[in-house]
Length: 73
Picture 1 (cartoon, one colour):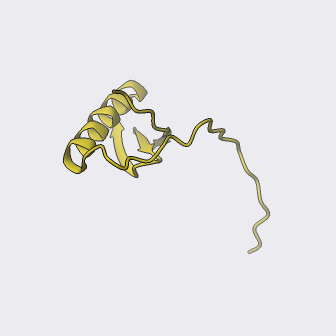
Picture 2: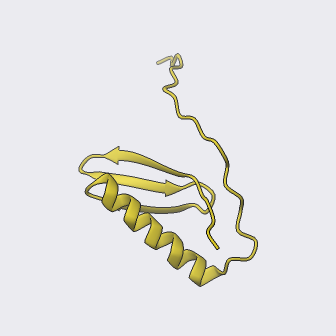
Picture 3: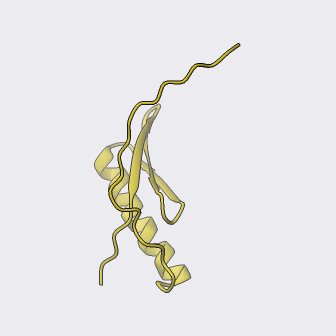
């Protein structure tokens, strides 16, 4: 059985940091591909450790966009 989750990748200095939104799991890599692979392994280990019962559902379609707000000070 496969399960879908939502992941977000951000670039932080020399690393790509990837977050699984539903599980709160984070990993990183020097490339996007490495970060994705590391997150997949981390999520698999998380599920092995905590079980697959009561896993949250995928958030579904996710959209990211730049948000500008006024900040005083």
